[in-house]
Length: 143
Image (tube, rainbow, N blue to C red; front, side, top):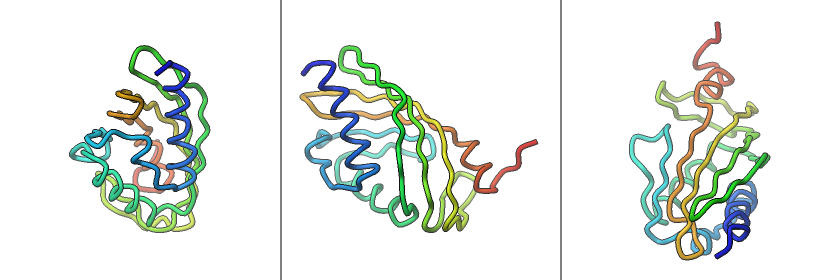
């Protein structure tokens, strides 16, 4: 698979799954995929856990729009620099507790790295602006 195809795969994930809410995970991820997210105590492992995580997220998120600023591919890795624009529909769960943020809109930047294997996403590492999210929803105060 070419580097351009690696980037198309990642772009498709954000457009169809994150923003479009389609269930095409079988087409995009390996069965044993591993998703590392700083806000979770343990990685998400496998397609079923990924589906459960996305379904739970969708209960609390009304709408997501992702702006991809750049995708860089090298070898089996794609790096994505992006901004998520999110409107919440319910609770947000954080390491500092849960809060009802229904109707509130926030945005944050993130760097996400993907490892591609056999034409699918095998691993994902999400590094997002957790402090910025917490400040926007009122769980921490900026000085």
